Length: 255
Ligand SMILES: Nc1ncnc2c1ncn2[C@@H]1O[C@H](COP(=O)(O)OP(=O)(O)OP(=O)(O)O)[C@@H](O)[C@H]1O
Image (cartoon, rainbow, N blue to C red; front, side, top):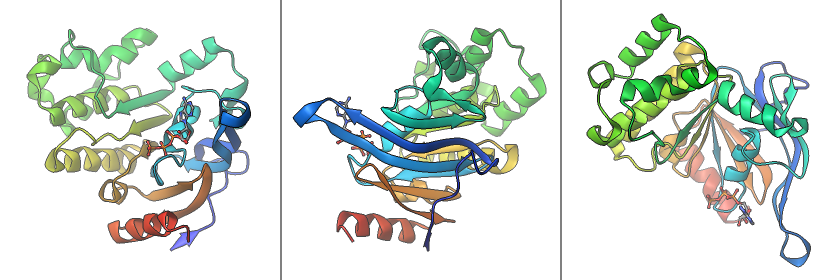
């Protein structure tokens, strides 16, 4: 089931975001940790990819570097045609705001704003007008039409995460990064959010990269990229829960 990694953006125009020989070292000298040890991987446009691997394998570090939230020690991060590693902070901030969407485990909604205002916040900050037809379709698909005037505290966890998803998708960013998006949800609400992530790739062509520990969540993705010890350790296309669990067990056993 496991194949060689998909080529990266420089060689494959289908990649929305890619890491090229990415190295991230935390600390110096004896205490230095090589969190990423030369990772080269592309994430195809319009597809839903999960990043998995044992604890400490570098999943969060890779996602943070790809999203311009952390700086790499060496290597490249290509977002479209832009190498994020060479951009000044101002450009990185603009890229994060305008070209990338985020969904976090803890939802990260602004408590004093209604669901509607949370959803349009990225567009408002960028001074962009919403595509109202797309926005309405998104809100209907996410089942939020009756909840737009509510504050986050008046919504269930699943509803809050659907608002966060709408906020991430509404500007049609080049990539949506989801960090354990179902970590705070019960299994039913989690399954709904995962199905919505999958559908937004399939139906809207949205590129999604998700970090998860859960093989059940990863099985919603089109592809799973495995990390171990800061390196790529294979990938699974059209993953099943059994295939992902098996691959994780092999990595844990050092096979
Ligand atoms: N700010 C930091 N300073 C020092 N070391 C760090 C820092 N962040 C991460 N590390 C180390 O880098 C390695 C990779 O960490 P990372 O959080 O990317 O792994 P992960 O696969 O996301 O782990 P988990 O599944 O436990 O969340 C680990 O050894 C971790 O201890």
